[in-house]
Amino acid sequence: MCQIITVYLQPQQKMEYTKEYTVKDEHIDVQQIMDGLYYPFYMEYCRHDYIREVLGFDFEDQAKKGVHMVLSGYKIQFLRSLKKGDQFKVTCTLYKDPAGQPKIYFKQSIILNGKVMTKAVFTGTCVPATGGRPYLPAEMIEKTVDAPVLEGADL
Image (cartoon, rainbow, N blue to C red; front, side, top):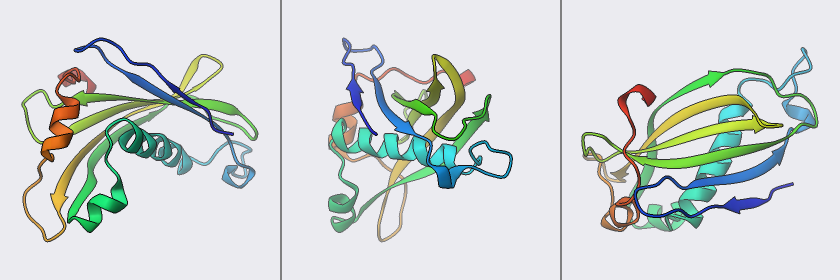
């Protein structure tokens, strides 16, 4: 089950993108909770849809053009465990780099019944397929110009 809820706000305000998922049986461990390995995967599904649908960056098309979007890091905090069959939401909100570096940040949460279960900040950038320095393509800079700046405490 997957439902898209997209909220657009005025420039300089954050836009939260949300999708819904259900914990798959095969993601449950011997303790009858979702294995920690899968939380980042659900966040990735949501983040990739956001990148494609909102930012207009198609991973396959861009790879053919020699542009690879990659993660350069992430910080994740597990607060509560999901269980078999839980229906939960994953959020994704875009932020710019405070120092103007060629990075974008995705603050994400997994939410069940109004409670944050897991939260994370993923850092992304683009690199040439042939190697080279990180950068953001002009069209991505254009689409992120109104994104809020990530505060240092959130890193």
